[in-house]
Length: 207
Image (tube, rainbow, N blue to C red; front, side):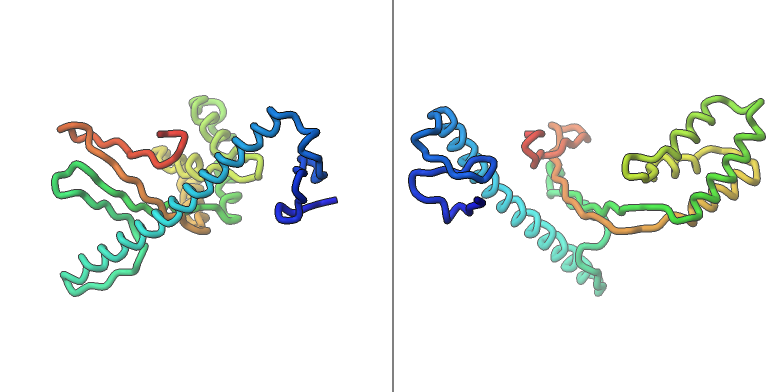
């Protein structure tokens, strides 16, 4: 029988299989473990809620300030669009709002791969082995069957004059599709009087 927290009668606890067990049959150490876990979970949920409110507030404050600043020049800008860096007056702190776009490739990537394969086949006798490794690594797919966009785009930095390679690089550029974006805010503090900044960690693992 499946029960909800509200339907558990006094003197019983629900186990991991959804069954009710009398508390007098449960070992004290198991009771204490459950109590500790529930206390930590409650604190974590409360902190999660605070972080969510903090994030929403920060994005709203930054958007409002960007609009205020733009109005000084009679311009209008749209909310949470674009990357922004805000510095404290003394330069000790900076806040970076950035937009990370999610990229994927359409079917033209296959055309690019075919052209690259032609180049590799023709160059097989004289091409540096590093190029073979780089190309093969770039087009490897992950467990979800997707290629790493960064690795594929990295091929465009290679200075190769072969016309087929150039066409392949053009196909890669045209195959890029923006499927979404994710906004994030990072807050930094300057290290002493240097020009180096370190992030103020907001995740549990980094604190």
